[in-house]
Image (cartoon, rainbow, N blue to C red; front, side, top):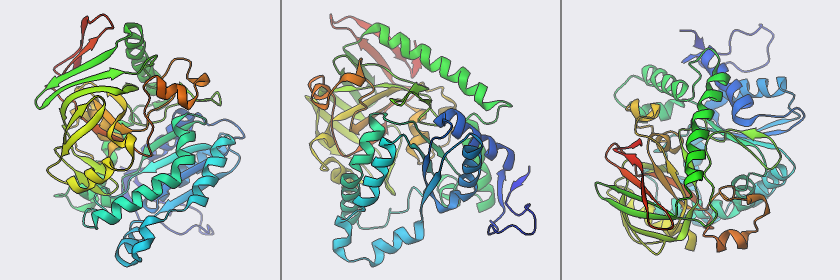
Length: 429
């Protein structure tokens, strides 16, 4: 294995040396190329705004290089850092947790509205805030969600092309593989990320084209069925999810409103659509832990009545879950339902990533909060009021959590009441 480091440059380089990491350099470079060409579909002359943890600097540099080779205008990166984040929670005055940088997010919204592409590199320590005051975590998240709304709206309405990829942050690696030495944990997480992101292939761009074709076939079949609702049954679950009027299933690559086709999530195994925010009934139990803003929420159990969660509990992180549900009226209603077979590569890896980008692609899932306006027929012409009338949900949050497993059955229910098998024992029928 070629260990990735940036000390192979000429002696006169001005870049600071990076620590040697047990990460395959060729595959990391392939991931950067996939992010630019498949994830974003970056257009010549288009600007790019990235966000990333400091630990992901090696990937940031490679993506920046490939973006400029693809003709990018200006590449700008905003970094986060675990040490400085924790410094706030442990030292800032109480009123700090009701504030957020609205000016920054207004600038991001302006950039996205001006055709700047959006790329996020995930990889923060999923348990970073596990030992911090849940009230402070909740208040800070709410303030940030309010401030971020102008930029988030540009993302959920697909005004621009966007993408998320991941880097094996050492702190994340130790959460996923706690019993391994750090270098082994990093190497294992890197290998898992590369496999899930399909950069093990000789030509990962072609591999993604084949995978997108599979997702599109599933999407097209569901759209042809015109189901009125989905019925999930399994251990701890008996849930009927009504689907929004005029809903449209999506999956794999799709065009943004700027005309650029992108793969928003790498990896992805899902096809998804918009539930009807007022037609969800029954109870459901999570099948994997949810890592939310540094807190682990496990064994979630909720009951829905007429679309709204009326009771909720969790064995871990329940205080944070309750704070999330109280974010706003839409936080107790669904904004997404997604189908993922239990045989997905991420599920079969047997790895719990403690990262929603990966774990949601191991299982069917639902999302609390904001819906995706693209998941409607004629979405480009729908106003927010029209989306609401058709059942779309509005909220400051969008939080996915997993409800699928090898024991889950799903039936599609037509408007006439006919039941059509969709999943049996976690697999497409």
